[in-house]
Image 1 (cartoon, helix red, strand yellow):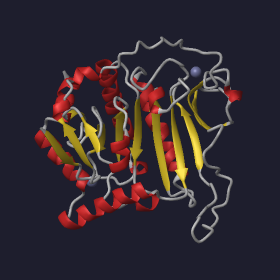
Image 2 (cartoon, helix red, strand yellow):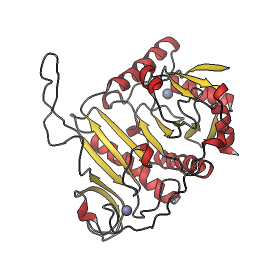
Image 3 (cartoon, helix red, strand yellow):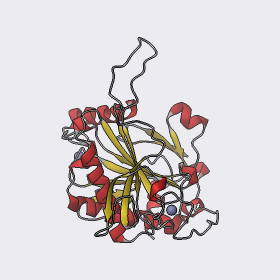
Image 4 (cartoon, helix red, strand yellow):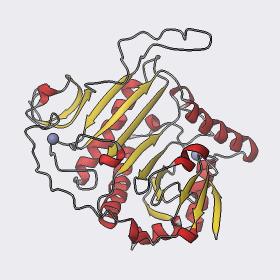
Length: 333
Ligand SMILES: [Zn+2]
Ligand SMILES: [Zn+2]
C-alpha cells in the first residue's frame, strides 16, 4: 500500500510507495571509488596553485603566511566563472513581457581544506568547525550589501550531485532577488503562523522529539532527523533548536555546535551508504526577513540515490521507496 505524506513546513506532498519498497541497505553506493591522493598538482584548489584561482577574498591562515600563497586552512575565492557579477549595478527590470534585470550578485567558492582527498565526513572536527565558521563569516559580510536579497550556501558532493572538481569545496551565491520557490516557502510558513500562532519548524522539532523514530542525532543546539515526508531516501534536516529565521543570526558557539552535528551526520552517511553523492543546502530567510517569527533556517541534505524523472518534474511530488522511520533506524545502528 502506498501513502501520501505532507511536509507541514514546505507544503510538499510525497508518495511513499511501499509496494516498491527497498530495504535501507540497498541504497549503498556500489561503485568502487578511486582513492584520491592528498595532493593533486593539476588541481586549481590544491596548495601551491593559488594563482590558478581569482585572488582570495578571505582566508583562515597560518601565522605569517601571505595571501594567495600556501599556508591557508580555509580559502575563499570568487568563482572563476561566476554566475553573477558583484560589480554590476542593479538596474531596473526592463520590457513589458520579456523581462530582464542586470546579473548582479556574488559567486564565491569556499575551499574547505588544503588536503585534496578529504570531505566533510573525513575531515577532523576542527576542520569542519572552521568551515562552518567561514560560512557564517562570509554570510555576515555579504548581508551588509543592500543589493543582495538572498544568500545561498550549498555544497555538491560527487558527480551525480553536479560537481566536477574533487577538491572539497562549498559555494556561496548572493542573489539580487528572492526566487519564487523561497517566497512560496515563506508564505506557507507565514500561513501556518497565522493559523497556529507558532513557527512550523519549532513545532516540527517538538513533534519529532516526541515521536523519536526519525531523530538520528542531537546536541544542545541542533536536532537532525529524516523528515516525516522525506523527498528522497535518507533526506536529512539539521534544524537549530533556538528559533532563528536567518543563518547569519547565529552565534559563533552555535556555528561550532552545528559543525559537530553536520560532521556526525555526514560520517554516518559515509559509513552506512559508502560515501554517497549528495547536495547540502543552507535554507535561510531572505536578508530582509532575518528577524521574522514565522520562518526558521535549517540545513537540508539530499543524497542523490534516486533520479527525479518525468513524474517528479511534472508534479513536484516525489516518490520515495523507503520509510524515513526505517532509514533513521538503519543509519543509527
Ligand atoms: Zn586539490
Ligand atoms: Zn522556529
